[in-house]
Amino acid sequence: MSRRNEEQLLRHRNQMREWRKKTPEKNRAIQKKYRTTHPKIVASMQKIWQDKNPHAHYLWNKKWRLTHPEGRAKQNAVHKQRGFVPVAPNIFNVPVDWHHISPNQPHVVALPREIHRAVYGKHHYAYNASVLRQLYGLGDL
Image (cartoon, rainbow, N blue to C red; front, top):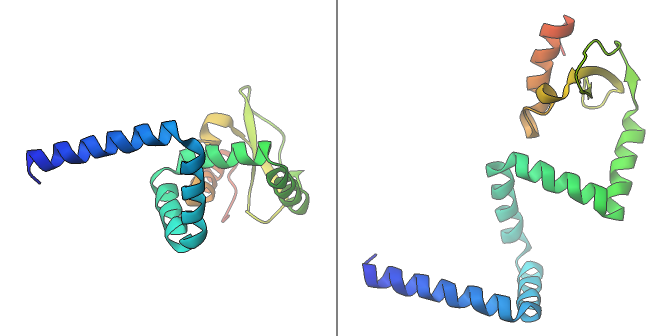
């Protein structure tokens, strides 16, 4: 792309940014219409963002669960369904999180918070299973 085309593109982006700031109601209506008419495209873009930013997605999801009634209800239902049965006492002198040994079982063990929160997303259980094997000598998880 030539320098002139890049400058035009940059100018156009700045104009659009200013228009969005000046007319938030119209912008919201346009975005809502786009989301309702193109749900597959929006879902694929969300999935790409989630894969690129797992920690940010975790924080966003956590905030949503704490602030929205339907998110809070969903979180409570999951915790009630799973349960909470400590397998071993807390042996650490640092802040801990209770980690479920298996995603669908109620059994939990204490892990130092920094270790437990080191990995989020689809690798969370695999990472923490290796840590549990080292700390507690648990067999195949």
